[in-house]
Image 1: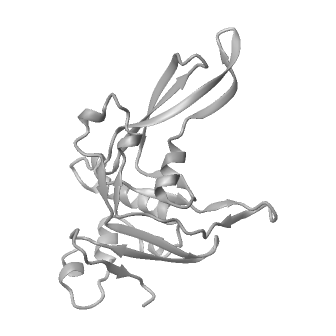
Image 2: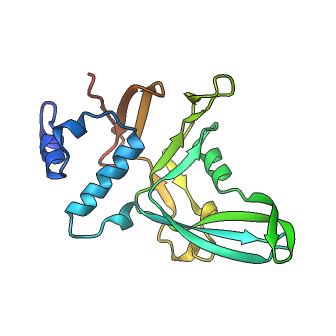
Image 3: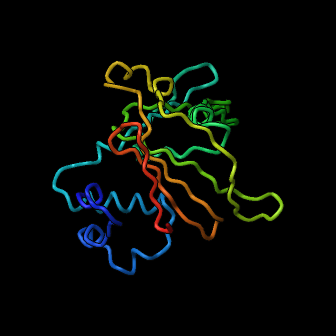
Amino acid sequence: FYNLEKGKSHCSTVKLTKALGMSDRSVHIQQDIQEFLSDFLERIQRNLKDEISYIFEGTTIHFLKSSRGTLLSSSTETFKQLMINVSDSVDTSLKSYFSPEKIENYNVGNETQTVTLESKISVLPRILQIVIKRYKRGLVTNSNIKDNSQVNFKEDLDLLPFVDRRNASSQNCTKYKLYAVIAHSGTLSSGHYTVFLKPEMKDVWFYFSDSL
């Protein structure tokens, strides 16, 4: 990381990958960025004595309510990434992700009802990772295709509307500032990843690509 910051030429990642137990062969295997990042963070966790999951890990709480508004059950789930669908903007996709879902013909006691499943964030991660799900089933080809639709986003994001109000006061901050974007160009089966990074939270963005 010192060479990355202070070096005058390209920076090799060999020392980092070897320290994490990644073989030369595994480094060159083409992977989805979401899977690679998850594996990368797990390897860092295993090699550090201090717990780092609190940095990237958050918790959602799910409420199941009857048609009369009675709470039937609740459960919690941890997450490291929020997987949102493609829409016109990240804000719109988040609203859709956390919007209540109607479930018909759900058994409640001796009767079936239309119940509501609602999700909220109960614990926010310090670093939020949002993944846009760009792969979907094609109606014509009946096979997976990539959706290249443009998704707009801002540098500032406030998750307060999606936080469980019972825990809202306990959250230190619900606002996030963008500092990294990973972009994919190509198709479902092949492509290239590039990164836009603002490491010092200043108004200077850096572009990373191994094809330059």
